Image (tube, rainbow, N blue to C red):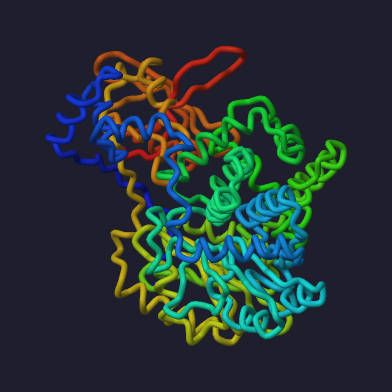
Length: 577
């Protein structure tokens, strides 16, 4: 009898530390009172010295790396300078997601400030898919352009760049995606992931690479830093939205850019912040990811991503307000499509998949919209904790796919081993896009699962929550919370600290609200108690209620209700006894 998929309950682990490093931290860092818990939090971020501490807690533009560490950077700057002097038409070729849209707008605004003859081209996600296209290159050639600068794409566009070369167009590639062994024959390539590149930070988003280009151009042309620093608000939005690690330069970009957002001069950003209720607020990574980015992404997912670029290019507040309203409406439409596909995908998994055989979930449908299948794939990974790839099958027999993965399965590496079945693909360890012939999907599913059988164990399908430290409830004070706030901006590589409390009990009966969330008041042996909120734990309400004691992994957050603020535990995982 076939087993059915069930969401796996999480396992809570506590990070271990080298005691010598904890002592070193306590001895070297005198600015704050270093308790054992705070020492562990600092150590969990790789901070060992006073210099590490200052760089982390006081990120500065002066800490940016020299952009000329990039291979081909000087060559790229010289070619752009020549194009500006000779009044050659330049086209920026972007991508349709937030990273690509913000990178396109940033580079275009900067080149406009240098009086360059510049325009842009974004592919239609539904018709052309990701990256450079033959049609796009031909359209740009007809405009008379002599230089294309890609942003957030191009590193695997071999045929398209070859076509551009044959049409007398030079191509400068700026990208952050994984390169193949062979590189396209571009005039210059800026990508920190190139094996020969000596740039010290390879975690930049596409918009981050574009930022390094304009930083280098400003220096190359003898301009002041203010010429490029003013775009950090826009760059921060693209960086946070692309879910890259918020460490190194990305942390500097986000920390400074988020502050600039509060008083942004970009009319488009201002209108989007306003319509989403963020204007004037202190912006966090969560605001970008859940309030701004979905609106920007929505227009690209549904076809016309140019509205996102135009939003950030306009200096007219009335026009900006109209574009912001369009983006918000597109996101409403996107959510409706997304919810429908998610439910269909969940049902398909329950009816067709076997947890002992389907290590990777692969499915496709002619009813699915290619613009939102990536979100649905993410939800499958979130629910079942195993890699997932969903395909939107087109009428021409070609299926466009989007995949998401778990930490223990490098999706791009796996796709490389299945490349003979794919028409094209690209991405990285956690996410990828691809196209395939419809009649190859079943074979692709089989081959990908063969790879997964040799890579994964069933233990990989149990979500693991790594707590930074074990704490008691009486440690969770506002002074402690204030220190945590100083660690922002949070994101991959610097996630909000997770703590664990053991031997907790219910002070009152847990309550379910909105049919899926559980509100608790927990207490310990010291008679301390705190509010806790467990989002999407409705199905486990009885388990929580009937347990004598339980262990909770959580983040510490502030909740405001009817003008009153209090600290509460935001539950990340539960182990019941």
